[in-house]
Amino acid sequence: MEKEVKDCIVKLVEVSRDAVVCSVDEEGYPNAKAMFRIKNEGLTTFWFSTNTSSIRLGQWLRNPKASIYFLDAEGFHGLMLTGEMKVHTDEETKQAFWKQGDEMYYPLGPTDPDYSILEFTAVKGNYYHGLEKHLFLTNEVEG
Image (cartoon, rainbow, N blue to C red; front, side, top):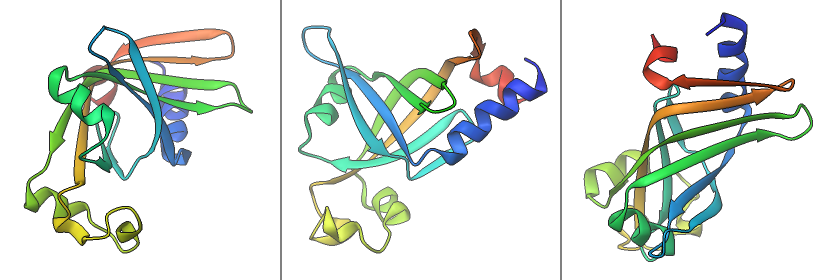
């Protein structure tokens, strides 16, 4: 992949606070929801927080296949990453990602049983801009 395309992909992720995160329901239909990205490690690993009681968390426990999508509507850039979602409910991971203000969503703090962390690991991507699409494996872009 050309350096300028890779730079555009990285910039799109960096300036995006939100991502559309997708799961698969029990009948095989995709489900999408906008979520705050709390951290990422390159284009391979992305972290989100969610309610343990959420519909999607249950879907990922049954089927970890997932995708995330970043969009710059004005510049007409889109990036879809496909991979798997892992659910973390352990205290160590929850403490590691807890930040001031999260009590708005999880009133009992980092030990709130309705607070979980999601770890998305991307395998491949599809970046679209300027009437061109760029398909890639994330481990090839990271290197």
